[in-house]
Image 1: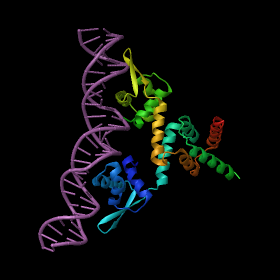
Image 2 (image 1 turned 135 degrees about the vertical axis):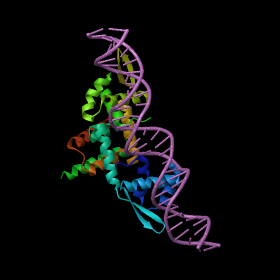
Image 3 (image 1 turned 180 degrees about the horizontal axis):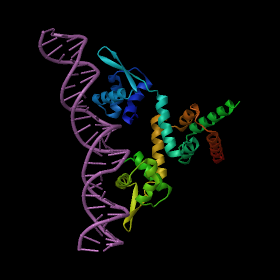
Image 4 (image 1 turned 90 degrees about the vertical axis):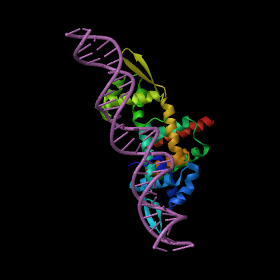
Length: 123
Length: 123
DNA sequence: AGATGATGTTTACAGATGTAAATGTTGCCG
DNA sequence: CGGCAACATTTACATCTGTAAACATCATCT
């Protein structure tokens, strides 16, 4: 079962710091997303059903912790896009951003560094 | 209005070659997707409503042509992912694939070439 | 002209999603 | 102990999606 976009917003909070209560999550994303309490609770329940988070009782409330690692999620999403749009290869994706002039100086510098590291690994 | 995944499959056919009839589209994706005729027709109608394709009468049938350019679509999707998962920057995305050992030799070679070109542009 | 077949158009229906409202539960306060 | 406040759980409901079935239209064959 895939995680929806709204659910991912909740996961993001938990990935930044867990465990958290529903209240804390609401405080963190409610204003920005314009969400009510019920919305966050529903999303948490759906995430529980999908086994993406875990709830541990703490007195009257629950503490929620991610079960799905951010890495896993990022991996799935990225691979999906790459496969659908760029034949599964990374270079065309970067070329795309390059053409769109969406590479910042920092990006370029980091890419250079990355390639250098790959070089070094080669022994 | 965003284009759904199933709709994007139809767009892909049209991006490869247009205009096309519903029948041709079905012939091209039906088998692989396990779709019936009605499915393709529905998707085409939704795409029409979203103004992502255009239909031009040709005797008894229609010829469909994309209105939305593939570049636009790719741009939206890529930017969406980048913003949601990598803070809008390209380098972390590439680093991610690098860590996952998902960079092919070809990818690396192409990235190198790309950086070199950017270098040259800088003159 | 009526039946047939090729096409397009409308309607359907289940599951996912966004967004809660309604309802249930329980520890605590008076 | 009875009721409220704080949580959680259940139910709701409109959209969007995937996937067609049903129905309408119209050129054509008999």
